[in-house]
Image 1 (cartoon, rainbow, N blue to C red):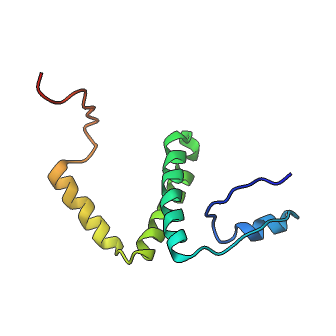
Image 2: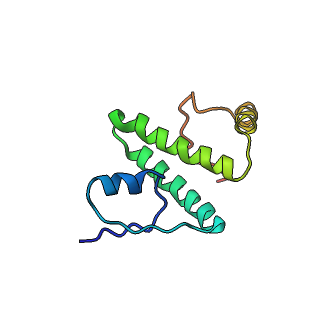
Length: 108
């Protein structure tokens, strides 16, 4: 029975599938398709990290970082620029260290 995925996978996945003696089909995406697939993978990996057990969180965060690193490379974004923006936003808006939950906002 075929499992249909139709999604971006890591480069060595076909080798791993072949080593397991299974068949597969792949194709190379256009640059535009790749960009969209990376953004979809970002959401996928973030969802997996959000529901991961504590024992799996490091692996899921590593996957998320891999997608982020690839996105930065594809769009020519310097990692230091992202860190600088992160710091700027922390100064402007704060971090999450105080564990604040906003319950409501607005006029009555």
